[in-house]
Image 1: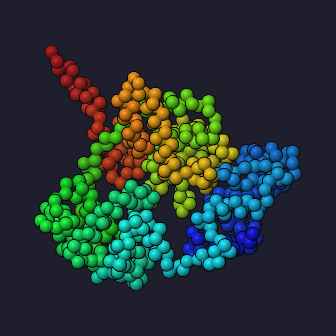
Image 2: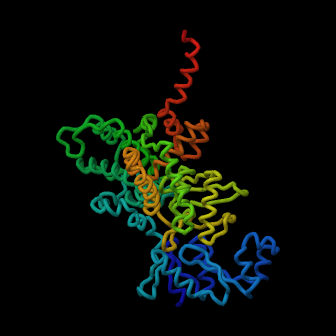
Length: 496
């Protein structure tokens, strides 16, 4: 195999791998964010870590093998770093071939296809359009309508930091940056943008960068009062739906204006999004007793030290004790997040990429750290994550990172198993658990912070990654325990 026949299509512009296997392995390791092949000797280990004592702390498995063998090989296979004597390890070329096959969506062979896999750098934004799930599903009919630049666009100006030449490219970049990797946010944004585009199409307006302030105000009026005889808006929308629709539109134009794609923002002041946040009230809450039942079920299955069982416990612990959104635990090679760091023994931090592609640091409590340590040992990784480790926190069955669908299934399996045990004596509680999803654990985490332990709202907001402290404060509105205690303490002494 000639490594130069392979192209990394995720770089801009795409590039060929080096000719030598060793250099190609280095490039693949940098692209994947973790070590893939290393040949260790005692001399190299001592040079790397300065002393055998430090080498033992950092690489205990490698040092143990080197005490009995001349060399040891670390290589990546099926989602874990394996360590074997040098005479038992696969060749570097074999490891490289397996990795390229595992990540064949990213690395393409020009030898097999007979074509260059490179994409011109000028087509980067167009590639985003094709890769965007919402545009790929819903955007074909509107592509010609969107693939223009209206009166407020400045596609070729020096201040246009997006580098987009038309609305379809600018829209793809907006959806990528604003929705992150959440399919739920993408679906919600897409529905509201389609609503606006249908309204424009019925009136032969557009593209989006051509709409004036008067036209957008007319759209807002149509959402509020409805339009007789119009197919797209026949009945007035509720205040919550209307507020959400206008917030998405305002966010689009504000993003375009801030990045220089538009030289004016016709949607300024169109939406009052704070009203939606002020009216937020979490209702999908799991009672503490049911959370305890789920914890007890996992503790009871603790005798199962298989890798799948430990992985399920690790997933539960992260959603339970970190309050992350479903998508925030799915590995992204682009951001190298989520990531674990151990600043000191027992003091771990989880770094995630939240909404709006904003990074967030979440300290992990001791029960969560203990579960993650056991899971990492089962994967063949050091119990404590080394500095700057860039590995997927949760692996899949085939060695790849476990993504949202797999994470969702694991949590739902826990809810289903506990519900089965409750079905006979508490059918109502079992029904509630079957309806629960991983996001309910985020609500439980927030409620524990705000209600049970009265964590200051700014601190809870930072941990949860809320854009507004009003959203965080909404969890206190659902609980009357504190108010009841205040009332009892105030009036008890007045009772004759």
